[in-house]
Length: 474
Image (cartoon, rainbow, N blue to C red):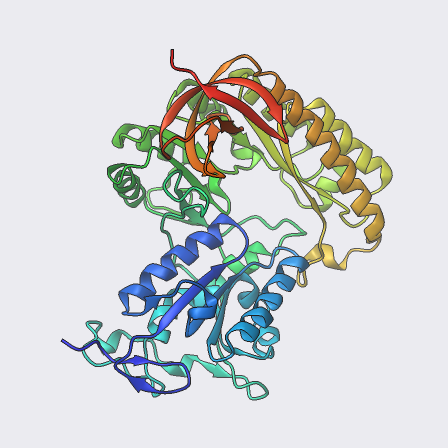
């Protein structure tokens, strides 16, 4: 049977199936969206290319959390256009939602589709230029969205499909696999969007309100991953701890964790970033007492200054945050505890920074993600006076990173001579094997070992930021 006709870049409509490549930028939620896009494009009959240079259609799934993220997307468009001038470029994701016309003016961009319509990309790319569904397509043509929703930017010729993100109810979810460890540790997005309005953050304006994947769908996805042989699964979201608040009947995140443990045979569940106010006593106790939950808590802090936290519109005070972390440490003495910390927020004084530094030094962190503030158009913080000079912000970033590195090294050294369980990921240089411990420490094991295996290793030394060990045969 001949292949259904497909839209070929350049306007031809023939029986050859178009090839595509999806390139993702930014957070795990964006990567999860990209995984769904790939599935949908293949289901519509398009073929995945090995890279952007071989693809006829390139989909850039963008981030916009910082100005640097926007720059990365623009640089990628230029790079792809140089390497593959005949391909058609579709830009989607958070940058496309925030500033579609800016992207549409870039040479080489054919379509700009916001997060509001990302779920329609496969349908858009499987049409012919007149908007007809291809012949023999199994999708009822009446279900196709009207092409009148597409707007044309006359100055560039690019087509735009962007709408009100707060009216968006879709949640795209599919497991994401790390390219370096694709046979282990899939990441499953169970929540998207955010109802908070932190003054520095553009994410609610480009991802919309908080939306939760239904409980039974999550359980089904985890069971499918277990049946496929995966032993550790990471659950994630834009604001993961708010999972279930929008469901009817309303649910809470600890109920999801319990159901996964009760209804699946998953060997290890790892929780992604959760806001401090959502690390309830119930969740802490559950994580501490279940041997199937990884001993790992990522708890965004942003600042240790009460004055700055208030200007950020964060919903906790420094002492509340410290209490949560101390409870986590008391319940899980060997857990990895990490945080996001921002420097250079508008009006951050030297005294504010010293308070943040003091918090970092006194709290039981084992690693940090340190960010320099980046003004995002449309956010309240972008309009604040007293923007911190870049050189001052960069110096504060350096100091925090050095402090975090010392705390991480001390945490690593505390396990010298001990035996730790880890899951194998991939092989280094054809000889040693990369693994990850329950408490989120990178481990380099001597010898070749198959991926996705639990091994017990004796920790012998710390080198170049990694634990070094040998498999304990005992």
